[in-house]
Length: 75
Image (spheres, rainbow, N blue to C red):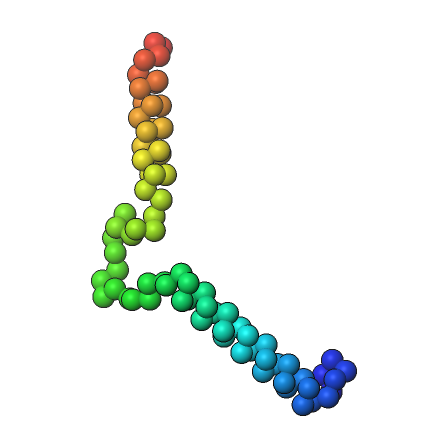
């Protein structure tokens, strides 16, 4: 007897919890509609729409600003 309950009760609770997990996963997939397609050719870096494009632009702006600041300072 696991957890101090009878086997039939344990198996019913286990089955109910597994069904609840499956139902929850299905509800999440229906709500968010994930793209489950697998491309034949892996995308190149920068082609994924999930990348943070604003972050890359910010990094480029910061590096340009640092270059300009270093060029303006007289040594």
